[in-house]
Length: 154
Image (cartoon, rainbow, N blue to C red; front, side, top):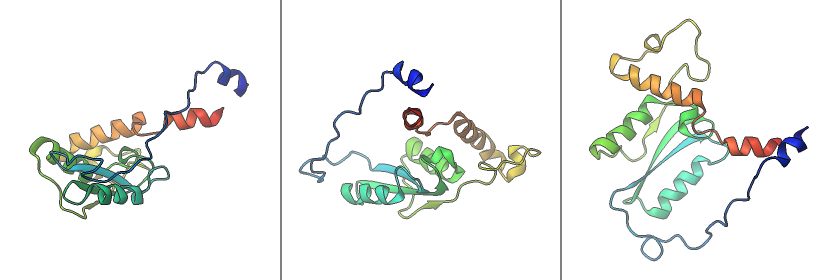
C-alpha cells in the first residue's frame, strides 16, 4: 500500500547544498541588524550546538542565540511566552535580548490540563493572547518537519 501512495508523489531531492566557506567579510556581508537564531535544547534535527555554531560563524556582534529550553524541532513545538516576547521586542522595537538568554517553555503545552483555560495556567492578562497564538501554532504543527514525516513513510 505504501508503494502505491509513494508512486503518486513527486518527491524531489533537495537542491545541492552550499558547503563553501562561511567567513564574515570574505563570503558573508555584515548584516544591518544582528541575525537572531532560536534553538531548542532538545531538537533532534537542528540541535542547540548548531545555533551556537551559527553565532560563532557570524560573530557575536552580528548574531545572537535565543535558547529555548524545550523539546522538539522548532520553538513552536514547545513554546515559550519568553521567546515570543523577546522576538516581538526585537522585531517591533529593535530591542535585542541579552546575550545568553535562556527561556523556559510554558507549562501546559506538552500535557495541557483538560479542565483549565490559558488564564488558569498562570498567564497574566497581557500574555494570555500571546499564549493563545503560541498554542494555535503548536496545534497547527508549525515547525513540524512534515516533509521528513511524509518521506519516511515511503
